Image 1 (cartoon, helix red, strand yellow):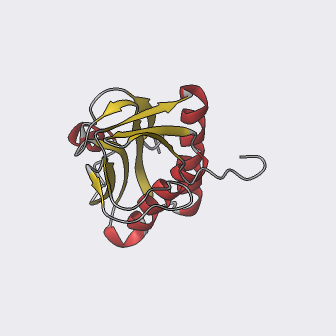
Image 2 (cartoon, rainbow, N blue to C red):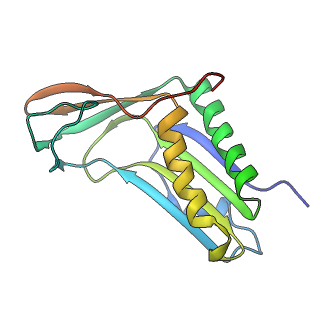
Image 3 (cartoon, rainbow, N blue to C red):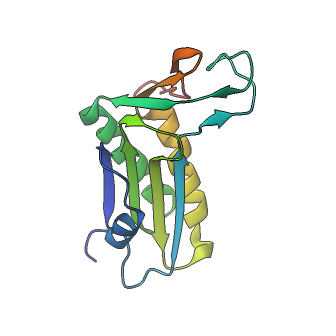
Length: 161
């Protein structure tokens, strides 16, 4: 069998869901699970230890940064882990935008395709975004009416990651 389609990239370009989906769809594909993260214009929950705030707040825009070679290598690792855990997954796309991004803008896309919906495709996409947040070095700074803050994510690589 030919190699299965796998996309992992850091980009400043707008995310094109239809194009990415077309690239990871095979003739045998019957299901796609897609997760897209977006910039919130307002955050209603209270701050956490990672993003301390006095409470709900507005966001004018976010600036995302990444060391591209390392981030893409870690994205490949995430894709490899998905393939090891869910052999039925056909196509994988893991794409992160960087640069200045405004509210309602997609920032990240994780998509997995498979022959059927009950083959782990939902779980694989969920694992993809959770793992991206854990091991892919991407940084964001939030800008709003109350100033600017580096937002610490869930980046918690273990030894060897």
